[in-house]
Each structure stands twice: as C-alpha cells, then as structure tokens.
Image (tube, rainbow over all chains, first blue to last red):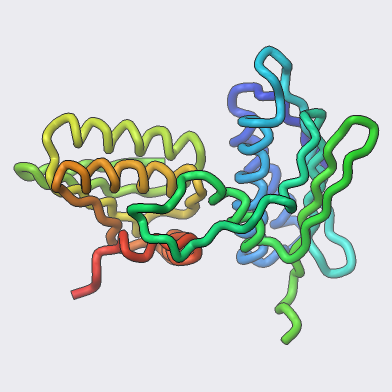
Length: 138
Length: 101
C-alpha cells in the first residue's frame, strides 16, 4: 500500500483512513495499529514542519507492508537530510515546570515502534519503522 | 475531535473526545486560550473520550498548564482514556493528572 502526501487539505485524514483500512485488511492488532498511527503522525508532522524550506513544496511517499511478522512503514521524503535516530533521547523525568516542549515527537516514535532505520539515497530521506505483530520476545 | 465546554464561575471543564492530532491540538489550544482570556482560575481537561493523543496535544497541555501556574491557577487532566493515559505516563506528564479520590 502506497500513499503520497504533498500538503493538500484533508490528506492527513485520508491517510489515517488508508492506514486503518490496511490494518483491517491485514488483521493487524489494535495495539500495533495504534502505535503505527502515532509514530506516523509524529514523523509526518516533523517532515512537514522542518524538512522543507519555505516555498519548496513538500513531497513524501508512505509505503505500508507486512513482512516477516512485522508491520512496516517506509516514509520517503525529498527534504533536507535528517536522521532522527541521532537526536539524543529526552529526559521524561524532568518536572513539568522545566520540561522542554520539543523532542516529544521523536520520543514517542522510539517508544511506539520496535525498529527504526534510516538511509539517504538519491537526495531522499528513507525512514522505516517496524513493529512486531505478535508479542515481543521475553 | 469534539470539545464540550462547561463553565461554572472561574472553573472551566473541557470534555475532549475523538482524535487529538495536530489539528485537534490546535482546536484545544484555542479553547484553552479562550478560557484563560475569560478569567478561568481552574481548568480541567476531561479525556475519557480521547481515542488518539500525540505530542502536539501534549505541547498544548504543557503550554497552558504553565500559563495557569504563572497566573496562580491550575490545569489538570481528568479521567484519561487508556490511550491518553499511556501517552501521558510515557512522556512524564503524570503530575498533570487529577489524583483519584
């Protein structure tokens, strides 16, 4: 399943429907669907917010698949090079009075998904998120 | 996303239901800002009907929690759904929850 986003009105809501339909069709457990929904919401928002200079139209393609017992979402964008895996983790123990407002999105992606992969190829960022469909091994 | 507002004197409660994504977070921010502008001293965000919560929603809550603290007021989250509670706990927002009586 493939979906293209270019910043058109309503496309984020359309994408959520596509994700839900894909998960239903492939009997993806609700917990995995919810985790993927959250991780993709955070990653796509980050791309729209930071990956493209003003005046440059955003372009990204999301590929959803099931392979080797895992849900996989591969997001390719034509924005500036950025590997979010290199960003240091946030300290969630910081009290609310001092808690920074930034970095929560990346934290939630890391918390939601089991594996994250990044590569930069032909001027594109390719970020892949995977989550096991069954219980995690002990 | 739906927001149902109840105001009694300077106590404002917002019952939030549905998907608090980026767009939902913007709606929530507007509601909280309006409550503060109207002189709210105590704000409760009731989240039993929240089916999805993301960092944009957390940022809105944190921003207005701080504003209320600075004004000598309070903002709390009440009755979070399982999805909302997981996110609030995972992100270190547990102290924003109203303690169960």
